[in-house]
Amino acid sequence: MKYNDIYLIALLKDSIYDKTPDQPTEAVDWQYIYNKSIEQNIAGLVYNALNKIIDKTDISSEIKEVWSKHTMASFMHSVKQFNEFNRISRNLSEKQINFIGLKGCVLRSLYPIPELRTMGDFDILIKEEHMPDIKQIFVEMGYSIQNDYVGIICTKNNIVWEIFVSLDEEIKVNTQYWDKQFIEKATEINSIKCLDITLFFIHILIHTGRHYVSEGAGIRNLCDIVLFLNRYKNDINFELVEAVCKEQGYYKMFCHLLNAAGAWFDANISGIDTIQTDTDGFMEYMLLNGIFGKHDNIMLPQLVKKANGSENSIKKLLFPNAASLKHRYKYLNKAPYLLPFCLV
Image (cartoon, rainbow, N blue to C red; front, side, top):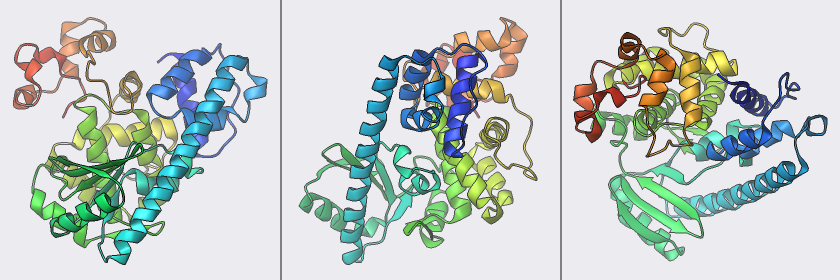
């Protein structure tokens, strides 16, 4: 991995741990790091660490100004977003409608500065019986409503809610059973009702894995996993995590994510059984993509690069079950070698 990527990861790690970063030991392309952090939707997080040493670096005043303004704008948008989240939450509570917060609206509280954990939308899970009331409430509060496969999408002034009645877009095996578990075994984090700790961890692993095996998943997803693991490791039933990841077809992804969390972010993965994986290659591919990948991503050059052009090495990077994924990835019918080596 090139030094610019290594230093970007180091800045990100120092930010989520609220530490002062080390000075770079090699020449840094600050424009590249800024552009990559924008692509990964972590610009504010990275700047938060960089700003502690910025006067001792050779970063240009132009990049510094643009980056600072972007961070402030992102911060203010996050404040606006979460104020609206609280407003809607109070309204639903008054009408005795419970919801379960998913992903960012809960995970943000684990960051030293929650507002720097950006969110594209709020994801919540509700019982299907509450859907008519939910629609009425959001319409009354000025939102436009769009029906979606997973439920509805509510939009107002660049604030988006995605409201699920099932997580069957991600949980493919025993869907009804797991939906019931998700709703009935809820807990609270930072006053937000959310999934049981073990089930929450399972969900963010599978959610990240689902994105990774389609268009790709960005490094912010890994930060979520690192912080959640560090805070709640003793509360997580890893036997259940491993069993569900295997059941859902994401066991290798479970190993990749935890190994990368340990190797690159010093997450506490001691005592957790995983198979050995290529953490450098995994991180390189995460950085190749945006926060939720690129629809035009081309895998073959990456495979050739990692395999040094060797046909046998390329084969080792591919999963043997490509045929079972052809119904989802139509291009595999003509070009099965394009399947990324981390697919499960």
